[in-house]
Length: 152
Image (cartoon, rainbow, N blue to C red; front, side, top):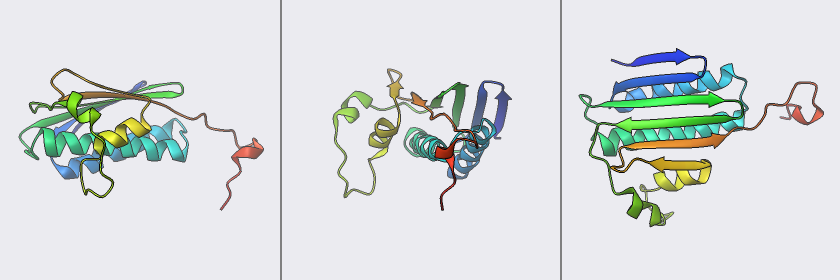
C-alpha cells in the first residue's frame, strides 16, 4: 500500500519496493514543488535526484521485492529542500563507491555521480540504506520581473 502524509513542511511517502511506485512518488514530489511555485529547473533537478535515489532503493536496496518497503521524505524550507530515502535492504559500501568515477560509456553505475552533481549535500547512514540529500532552490521571480519573461 502506498501511503502519503502531507504537512506544511513537506511530505512523507512509504510504499512497496516496485518500479511503478517510483513514478507515483515523483508525481507527488512535483506536485509539492509546483504548490510552492518552484521554478521548472528546480522541479527537473529534484525529480532527477529523487528518481535516482528511489531507483537505487528499489532495485539495489530492496531487490525489487514488493514485500520490502521504501520510505521517502521531502522537507521544505524557504529556498531549500531535504530529501531522505531509506530502504529495508542491507545497504552498500558507499565510502568505496563515492571514490569511484563513473564510466560515461556504461549503462549503469552513474547514480551517485548524479546525486553529487545536483545536490549540495549527500549523506549516507553507516550501513548505506539511507541517504539524505540537500538542495538549494532558486528563488522564483515575480511576473513583473523583466528577467522572468517566458521566452519560447
